[in-house]
Amino acid sequence: MPKAKNKTDSSASYADLENSSVIENETLNANLTENPGLSMIGNNRISMGRRLPMLIESRFGYVLTGDMSPQVLSLNKTLPAFVHCCVGELTLNNNLSKLWELDNVRPKDQISLLSEEERECEIHFRENVRKSKDGRFIVKIPFNEKIQNIGDSYSSALNRFLNLERRLSKDKIVRDQYVNFMKEYENLKHMTKININPSELNKYFFLPHHPVLRADSITTRLRVVFDGSAKATTDLSINDCQKNGPVVQHDFFSILIQFREHSVAIIADCEKQYRQILVSPKDRWYQI
Image 1 (tube, rainbow, N blue to C red):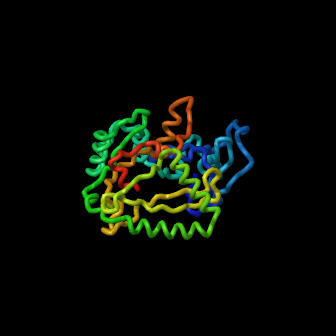
Image 2: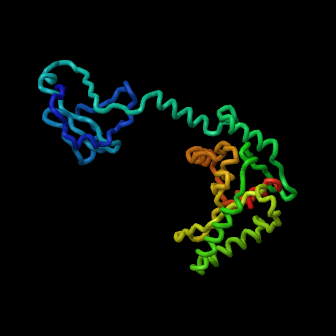
């Protein structure tokens, strides 16, 4: 076969070859003469240029084929010919890395990979988690040292509440939805009325809240969001006073792998799952 000195037709670059996933240094076979498997050949053909092989559609993808030059055909012996038509983009190292990722989808213990603060949160959880009589988990909030200087959050929370009242007074529909949402909180016992001492406001943290409207939602078009990033007089929020723990949810890839490990899978929805976990009574004073 003559060497290709001229540029090939750009349309050939879009052909789906029979073996397109070629790994580096792997041999790629090409048909250089006619064969009996004509039933496998399709109608589409892509020319790569004068005196060059062409791409022919087959049931396995495009195959490379072409005629021998007259000089080669005049010889009384068969000469092997090699054609390099693509370069693999994936190396062996990349493939091995993916294999290791699959093998370590669910590591048994990742505590050695955590930061110091994340390890402290893990230890705090294991030492303080417990169950109520009805089987619900009760946890303590992993506060850091900043909680001692949280300051007064009542004034800013009150101002935002008054602004919210003025906003709701102008929109009866949103106001009714907001009231119903808060009533549901109370009926589910996710919110209870308390008595506070006005002289000890620094012992509490008041969470401002506001509505978020989702017109495209089928179930809940209005949600009440509690703002844990609201600042107190010391420029600290309740979020600033908590340690950051590790991500406990599996990534989407791991979930898909686990889902395919079994022949039967059961899916369900845990309603209000995070609100099913109770906060220790002493820590509830920081969620008023």
